[in-house]
Length: 111
Image (cartoon, rainbow, N blue to C red; front, side, top):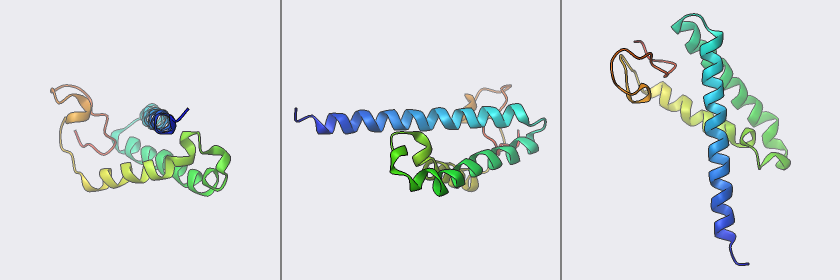
């Protein structure tokens, strides 16, 4: 049909949506499993870092997984870990809406 670029675009959007949803689930799990903010930070590192390692060492070795987020999660997680490692947050920020009173969703926020 000559629509290869359309198929590639739809595939990219589908993978990106899966990656975002997977990260959202991991952040939610870290928040539910940890009772304190500092524990939540470590739980986030364990969940995201663990799945990133698993993705790199297990799923990335099998091309049959290249239609699923876990195949690409290592790269996605490394980007998130790099951002978290280079940004220090001391109060409500853009991820929580910025208006005072809300609890931050960023795992390394100190508010």
